[in-house]
Image 1 (tube, rainbow, N blue to C red):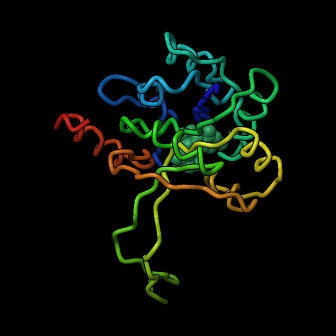
Image 2: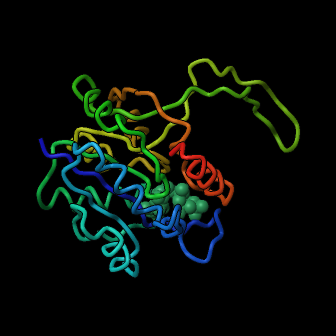
Image 3: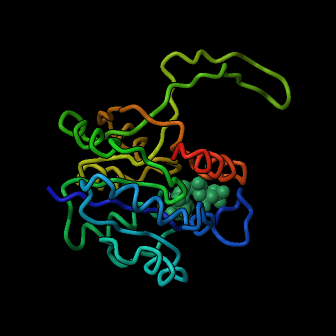
Length: 224
Ligand code: CTP
Ligand code: MG
């Protein structure tokens, strides 16, 4: 069954605050986008990448992905959810895959074994994501005061890549729920089962400069 990975690179990196979107910043001399692409392909289980980016970055994205099995970039939208939807619709119009992965270009490290575990989990559920149990004590606050302590039992942090049976994810996006910050939540809204597999601390989503600094430290310590 064909496996295609959507590689999301249409964000503008407002929170990071760099001169260019964070997916183009480098780690060890290579753009985060390139790291993310190679991480998805490392196990040989993903047949091709479908990048999604701003139209003005299409040539740059294609150049960064040169030599890899990548389709021409598709134009993203105003929100992450829009960008995924546009990528899925592009796949639906051509060589429709059986399985689709959705991954943030801002996550340069996907440990080996993750993609295999996700694909295996799709045998028994239409969706699967890597997730890490929450370890900090959680507080619900109003302004600068605590209202309550939220029990953390059963709470997890969701990561990407997230994997889905393609027709189920396409239908979930077409159902039109708004405000999703990941793709699993759209399946949850549709009452579909989403499995979790172990996530990884080193699968950092670069959001603020400290995230990139942490990855540089890990790389220098040859932990990556
Ligand atoms: N993304 C996208 N299209 C959007 C928004 C986000 O493809 N309209 C992508 C980003 O490029 C990133 C991933 O989704 O790889 C996760 O989003 P996020 O970390 O929020 O990135 P940005 O939106 O770029 O950052 P910010 O929210 O700080 O502006
Ligand atoms: Mg964003």
